[in-house]
Image (cartoon, rainbow, N blue to C red; front, top):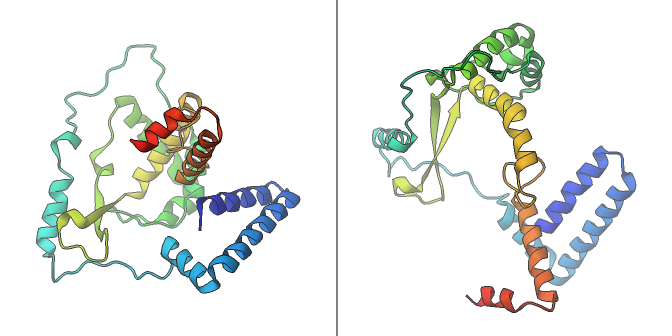
Length: 253
């Protein structure tokens, strides 16, 4: 599936949510025409084979070969990788604020909304399941509001929130070295909920206002597909324009 078709599928989904049936039908017809064109030119089997290779639909799941890796050695290597000197922050003293300083606070309604909208996910080291926050949000929200506001006022992210269950995942089907192992860290559910609240209230608004128009990462409803489509549009526009000498020099270099 090409980035252009993926972008059209996103536009179709957005149009259906907004009730624009005519636009969604127009996008659907255009996708169907491109599909028929590809099938006629490349053949049905070859077309679906390319789709399977791109989307990895029929690839087998990757597992650790325990005949190659010793569990104790792998555990120690992943632990040492997470204890790099640059990643360790030592808090010598708490954050001291002057009188009259307005500190950010997380509203109770925002915490309740995040608790109610949380979906099924891994619990993490503390083994508290997601449905506890989902079903008992009216009880837990005031307690977590007091804790999280205290953490923010002191400028401290608690050590218990940094604990994570580490899952080794190979980067390829054949991984014989530690560098070929990807570390998937699953923190506690409460830690992820706090990060979501802080991101939605304090970080995401600044990204929208201060971010560049060509910023595609860390933005809602934006991905690498939008970046590739924009880059393709920029390249084609530069090739069609009269002044393309500088661009051809870049391509040649």
